[in-house]
Image (tube, rainbow, N blue to C red; front, top):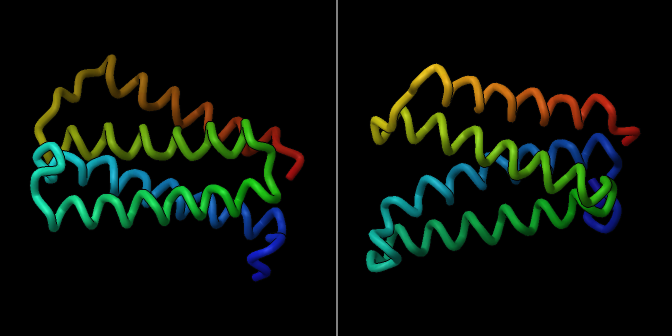
Length: 115
């Protein structure tokens, strides 16, 4: 893979990995206790940096709006679902429907993308 100009397929893979890393740092912030715990804070900052870097690489081949929306959608969906599972946040039908709508939006952006 060329780091200077990824193909569209490579960019989508980079974007997927960046989104998964976003879930990691978003959920990980819960463990930093307001950035007062050094270990979890270092992990969160490392994951966030890597996630942003991969997003930036993906944006070399994908439209900014699409890439950013998909990245946020992956992060929001993953964080919401993990919050329900790990932290026993409410998993109501309404919340699950809203998460499903995010997934539909992300898939829709991929399907209508010409990249």
